Amino acid sequence: MGVLLIVVVIAAGVWWVNVRLYPIRRCPSCGGSKRNSANANRWGACRRCGGKGEIRRFGARDSRE
Image (cartoon, rainbow, N blue to C red; front, top):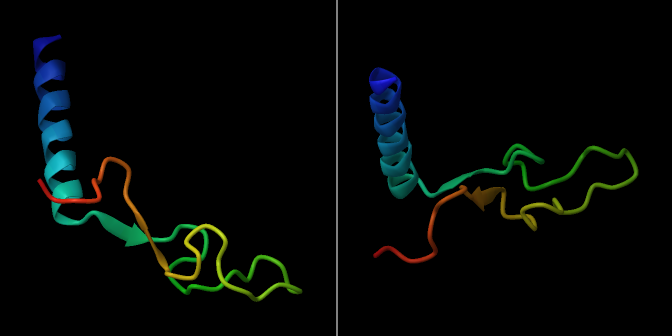
């Protein structure tokens, strides 16, 4: 049980540092292409990212503190 707790704490620490260093990732809906091609009749901007091609990762803050 103690080893599992240590592994979970280390994994959470690595994830936290990674989110602080890289707070933005590619949009999973459009794959960073900024366009939604899921429907052949709709080629507008991606609805999830708004045409930016990137989204903020879970846990990332807007300002660096």
